[in-house]
Image (tube, rainbow, N blue to C red; front, side, top):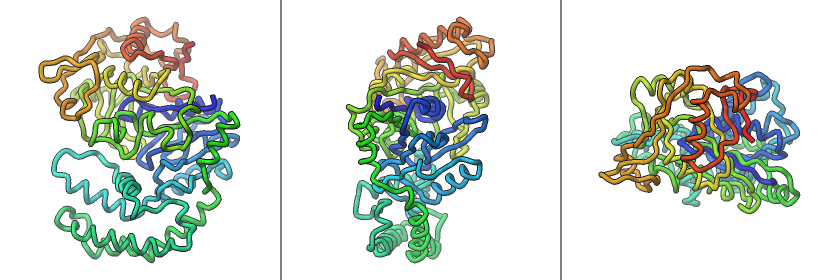
Length: 436
């Protein structure tokens, strides 16, 4: 302590929410530091299942401060839909939630841009969720057309929206029709009517006001005071904008390297990075996936693991565990320990396979390629392990797992080069095996 981070080491959907929920018991502050409403965590709390998108998983404990930091991009409608849903189920959301005034806002034009650019892609789709995340991050980096949460409370907000709505309308009008059939020019102008947007976002600003503050200073004060801060990653390391399988990635630094930039907390305060992986591999959207099983095995993994997106409901591509990819992501994120999730899904398989290296153009590689095209050509070299028939969802001690299950866990640890400290054998918190 004071800082512990949880990051996914695959292509997202690694069941990080459960790990964050468990570690929240030992935390004073839980921070969401990147991504937007394109991410989703499923948390089982008090016997009930909750699906979170923007709200940090610490929200279920009133003593814990939940923080949406400046590296997040926020769609106010999605935010309040989520808040209203949680409050309706008895969750208290008051001063226990903070939202950074530095976080960037998603506007209607961002979602339109997402739809137009996606339909214009005549090749393999990147797999955007159409929630405006990428275009919002584009404007953040471009600066001149970006609006942050704190800007909603400035006197020039209306003028700023009018200027940007006009600029976006001019730019997007040239693309409508040629590249996209979802919008006509008249529909575009209606969607980007500045007066309507100003009215809508003024209402959001008033409702959001009680949560908005300088979270960077708050977090710096918290770590200086030795408060226990938990950093909650979204998506997975292999979707990192700089270090993932570009361009089939998300729009933020979703690996461990993004913790400090997204939260504002220097790395010397982050004492442990906890990596989370599934006992197999999944991916959503386009992009190379060397161990994908587009066959009965993949379908069995999908059905047993309920592999459909928390936010989008999209079916996930499924395959064998890729130790090459996970080893790379663990090194990239400075991971010290691993949580191995959904091990129970593998019960009943006669054999299991782990990818230990790739063949690319006749050469063998045990490191993860930096170029997507090389990864697309990669043929996995597998190590075959015996499976087990026993159901393991009621197992509470590592020693009581079937011998073949223990060997599978041990082999993953050896190949990745990191200690496995936690094994999940079911969705509930109680179905977790802790290894000393």
